[in-house]
Image (tube, rainbow, N blue to C red; front, side, top):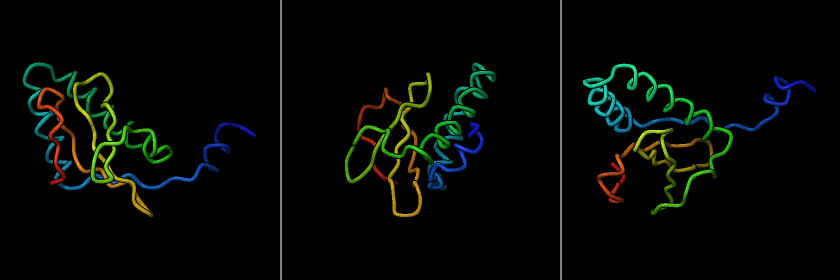
Length: 106
């Protein structure tokens, strides 16, 4: 069995960012792009790599509160907050770690 066949057998739940999450991501990318367009591109890519990971391993994140979990966004000081539902992974937002642990579901 090759790697492609093995990957096809993995059960996936789609990771769906909410509109609020996408707004948070856009704000973060705009801020980073002011000083480094290259880093903004890298962060954008890391975000979608994290979505792919959550689709196959939704339990990877640290338990947070109210049924939410969080994972670190690559090398950046942001966490991604999400909730596993029956048929999908609902990605609720991203939050810079300097803002503390007060992320609340939008």
